[in-house]
Image 1 (cartoon, rainbow, N blue to C red):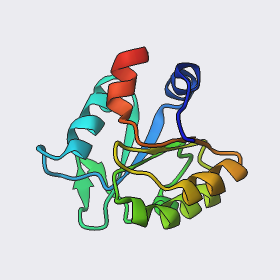
Image 2 (image 1 turned 30 degrees about the vertical axis):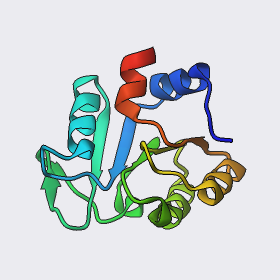
Image 3 (image 1 turned 135 degrees about the vertical axis):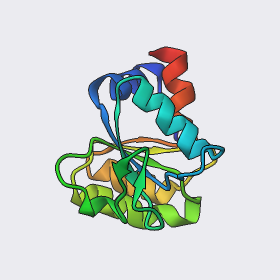
Length: 135
């Protein structure tokens, strides 16, 4: 079961403002791009993670989350469900506070691993939609 309460989601969005977006695209028509732009407009710090880009939104783009200097609070995943586990393992290594798997991204095994490491997990929900809905 991976449904989070509104209270849990609101707390994540209120308490954590630094988001590494894994799979962020430089193409404006991609969901990851629009969602990240929205979150930046709402005051969140976005850290692009995409090995195929050097920068997105004028921000340095990293090839993986363990290359990011400083703290990462939320790891927002725009990758296929079968590609999530290594990202979650990196998130555990860097001591992220929350993993957010976007709409359609579901990996129960990775979610359990993250929760067992004390990381909050949101799965199969869009961070932009949830922010607009409850914050």
